[in-house]
Length: 283
Image (cartoon, rainbow, N blue to C red; front, top):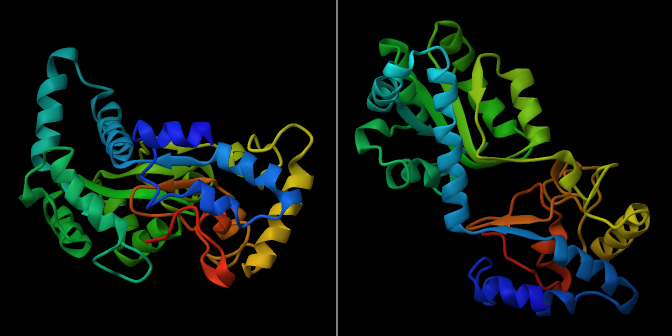
């Protein structure tokens, strides 16, 4: 709790009105408290400034792919040419909604990267112009969990054919799981994926090599999480539901971000059913 208080005081966590560890711990029965406290200790929160920094890092890493075969004297010119021609578009959700996080990061391309409005376009328009002009295309988002949103968009917009025509296509999410990264790379041939921060498999509470739990306690502690989840009314769908007790696709993360809680995160952190007090609400 001292650590939680410190996180709030230095603004690494939001105020108690948004993230309340004391109230969340009240959900747990006495035999479960050690596990709950351990989960709280492992919980990661990425505030807006941290997300912006990760997003910027992912975008700037594109330069490695663009400039790798250039002469040193040409590096600055080539990067400026890329920035002057690039088209930026958000990765939308499975059902297109203006509140999708991808649209938020479309605006951040202007705020964080300093690109002008004429570089920022909707997915269809950006794809059409890239096809006609050959201008590079950058897709932006906050988080990759399973990778399904990117894969769906890749197919629906015909980006495979665009990449094969020679257009450079980049994807720069602020955060990405290794699971989602691999799914995207396996499916989206020709896509240059450049996440700002990669989340390794072992950061999952359900992974065999998980570093979330103390040595030798993974099976025991995960069973306590399952029982508490069942009491809260969280379903067991073998990872098929976004509300599955292990997280979507059993990704089992202990993570939230400014403005959202990913479906890959354990629902215990954001659940509100059956009188359960969320640590942080899913917006």
